[in-house]
Length: 165
Image 1 (spheres, rainbow, N blue to C red):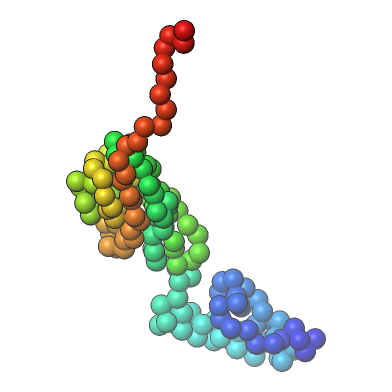
Image 2 (cartoon, one colour):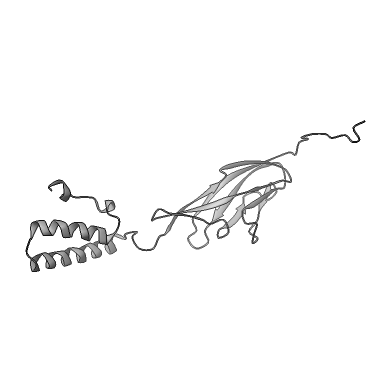
């Protein structure tokens, strides 16, 4: 029973209710009586909530922490396209596809342009040989990230001669 009441870091609890359930078990062990245990439990819960608010806990609304762009580095021939995907990483852990929610831009529009048009967000088109940074920016927070797009000269892939004889 002693191991059941080891102290844990705050981050090891799933949420406030899980923390309170653990403390209820510990209080029953320490204070088998009713009123003292209830008062202590209520005060502990109040202090916990005040502490979480004061420390800016992430147990409330999730906030965007970063954006990942895939592919990280892309190489295309001039005149062809490559689709980029923006994924938001949130404070509470989950991810979300932000491809159609971010603002896309290219650092060198003479090398490539990237679309913000509905249905083709993140679609980069090679405009000339060179290297450009493709950037996705969350308008609300200003959080952004970049990926590299290299545009090469279009090369001959195959030759087909018809008729065959």
